[in-house]
Length: 387
Figure: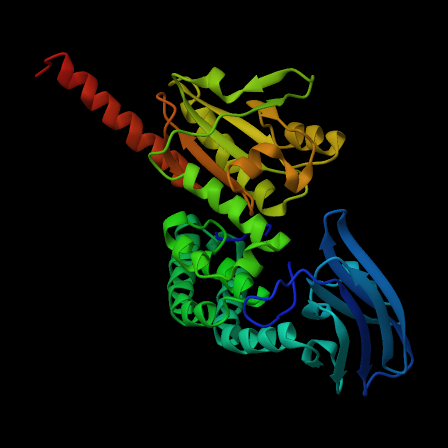
């Protein structure tokens, strides 16, 4: 099933450099909120994930801060006694921390708040409205699948769900493309491109749209990061020679991808903290046990930052193949080299070092390996002249 664990500046006049500091001041008011609560402001910087908090008193709260550039943030509001970390459907809204005053006004729920701010948030409001019907349909599809009894959540049901999701995403692309082309000097346009490309973008699909962005946007941190991803996607197209890397195993011994040449090797990006990865691991184990004696192996690359959690997951999930990690979380150097921005993600590399296939989840990995080995068997039979 397609379930995965998945920044820049304000708008200026065309051609004007956007690298301005984001000194923001947030004032929120939920008119129907009685008593006290807490508001949590969450965003990501180079230093990692940041969470700021403020008291909500009779529906009012405030935040102030300064950032090198504008960033996308989430705001969660809880009532007294609620723990936002334990709420699956928390009262939440996403907006941008941009330079200037940001006012959020709502009648009863912050999720329904209007955002009065600068141009970035105006663009975001436009994009949110554009995507709402598609997001509603996607949520409905996933809810319908989740409501099925466990015995009906089969591989076939997952494949049918994926097919419906892909159809919705294809429709979504048709409205995203004009939006992106209209907002080439906006951070929101770049975020729309991320949605357009999906979890696993193909360079040929997104590069023409990225090329249209202004120099100012490309020079932001978000723009530079997207260019880095794009370079990775180009290098990891099916048929390309797989980029080489080396990382340490649990004992600190460096393991090079080149050492697996001559075999089919699955480079599998995952992490102990990634729920979808852990759910996918039984499928990987099944394929490994089926083909490990047929010139096939796996090189697991963990995006963990804590060694103990990584090694415990390896043991708990019975991952018997070689595992490596540099313990740098999303900054894992191999992941950055391959343009990984969502996990689980994998790349099947042939004996000649070229990428044969990628993103083989569910039953797709076993099916692809079966196809490869059946084809190889046929070639061998033909070459021996057997009738």
